[in-house]
Amino acid sequence: MATCLKLSKMSTEPLVDATAYRSIVGSLRYLVNTRLDLAFAVGYVSRFLEEPRKDHLAAVKQILRYVAGTKSWGLKYERKKEKQVQLTRFSDSDFAGDVDARKSTTGVIFFLPTAQLLGSQ
Image (cartoon, rainbow, N blue to C red; front, side):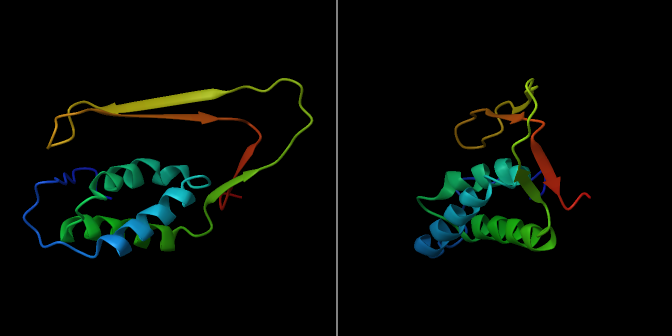
């Protein structure tokens, strides 16, 4: 998803099939468990589940193209026999980025050293 893309609930684009849109976004939300790089984009397009429009579906299709190009990426969780585990936290926010309600978006992610990235070996 483009970083400067601003979608709105008040879009004038034509409506699309809401059932198909919800199904795709629901599948992407499940995929976020092992593909944390998708978390923000999937959360963003989830805002439009009530009345998805053509531009919202275009953003979802762009996410699907990204997933298709990065199939080997992901997390592999392994149990290690280390006694001390270090938890690392990252956060980011977009102040008043929602063009409809002027709400902010905040994202937080935690990493454990037991997770191993796939595709980077």
